[in-house]
Image 1 (cartoon, one colour):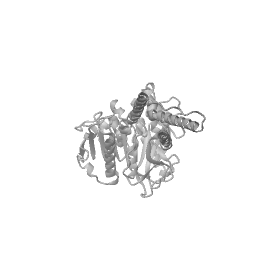
Image 2 (cartoon, helix red, strand yellow):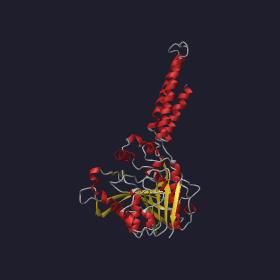
Image 3 (cartoon, one colour):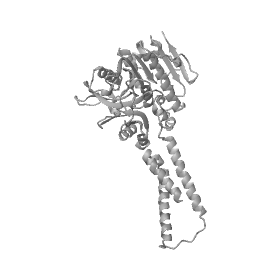
Image 4 (spheres, one colour):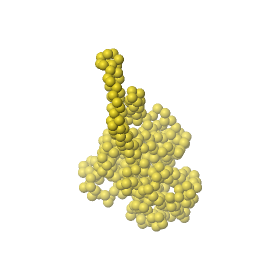
Length: 440
């Protein structure tokens, strides 16, 4: 019993040291601590008996009922922990496939030429938060980036926007990424193509971290924009936070597409300024702004379509399960584009206005077994999301692999000139993907 109690407390302490405390493990913490306390108590009793402080107790017959009760309680507690950990896991992000290490940096920009639509003061200018991932050769000695930048603000934003209690996402603080804060940009290439991502409406700047890391590891500089007041939460480096606007503030929602498109255009404007002090100096000399792709999920994909149609600096684009804006429904898409869909917004016959009106290379991918949130990291957040109808039947890690492979193949083909057999037609590797293409 003494050995078991010592092993239990040692394991508990190592768990706290290497991973940290998480509430899902409380049903195991409690018996581990009680066992240790009981073990210490028994050692004290033995010591006092051996020193003659107290008489040795008579050996009593085994109390089978008590032993059975303890066993049953232990099984219940351990089973509870296993259940909690399976439905709210400390999930692992897939390892990126590329040859580069990954650096990351977060910064904010303020557009002094635009007033904030969601606030009343006339001097409140539009702020956006940017998170960048980029290829790096030397990540040794740099801190690993957290999955979320402020767990308290993140959990509060999820509660307010999605309705899940803060305790259900508190363990996100334990999630490990493959990115390192402020690691130097790789000098293997003189510059790297630039990609700009927009989250979904009410989404999150880090919602597609798996895909961002995959692209960065394969030689892309990727920027993700948090569109303030229409993201669930935007946590700025100075500690300030902007949560999703209330329903009463959505009087301007009809203008949101233009606001998001302007955010994207403003970012490109800032990237084009030589040695711009508002852009991290790590990135100044490494961006190839002659090769720019825009992509996004849901309303973020709608934004990617909008800027691809209206800004000549955007060369290619991808939208994930996105509704279409008025321009996308009526104008010809003259640039290479990829549409990735599920049943929420997709059409398995690709009777889609963007696809039909395209005068350039266009791919249409309808992915069976998906729902709207399968096009982001939510695939692996919790199996409970499937019960809420947010995720489809497809395996979460397989869906992330599909996203990684097709998105990388498209950008490699269109921005780097690297052909991929994956884009030649339907794939035997991914039979759940209904593949359509046109090459005028």
